[in-house]
Length: 226
Image 1 (cartoon, rainbow, N blue to C red):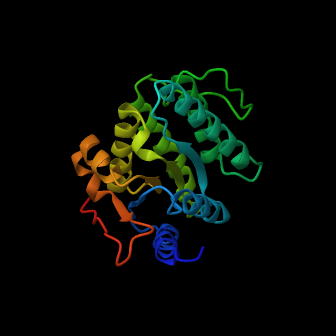
Image 2: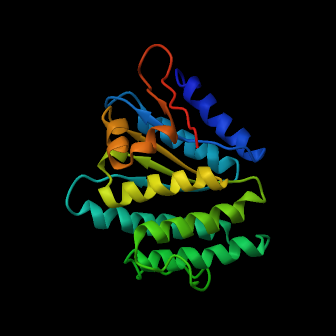
Image 3: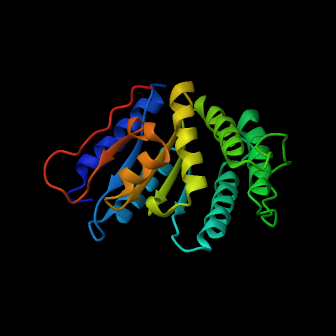
């Protein structure tokens, strides 16, 4: 990844701090089209996978049907990640968290997803995205914490997520930082992404490290005070 060492080093710091059970922020890549944000985001996800993280991939959709498409993708990615983690060597707590994933997928309105990975639970099934996402993240990330691992959602074209989902994601990133859950949003988007995040939740500027691939000079870092 030539010319991207600064961003890779920033992500490596997140990985290292996670292994030491130290607080972290999420990470946002912001820049014009064609500067390599998606390639870099894919690289960082692969890097996270190599460290045993529980990762999923989303892409924002600006069209009207994007609301449904993104939620279907969310459910399928969760199911795929759960299958990867649902081996006999996995600890009981993670296997229990898989039930929360099943319940969350149903609450998303995607009951047709058949994962065969466990029973549903009484968590993440309220039908309110803010509540259900927080319970999902809590159960999965705390199950991973004992292994010094993390739950990460990699989001391309993040500025195009619908307002409801974007707000819920920012809110749960804030909760994770306050409560010590190893959960991180790693997003990429156009130069308007930082403004979009701030408009969704005014405190979002404290939750992410912002890197601008393709720009000369130092990246701008948004420091968390949570």
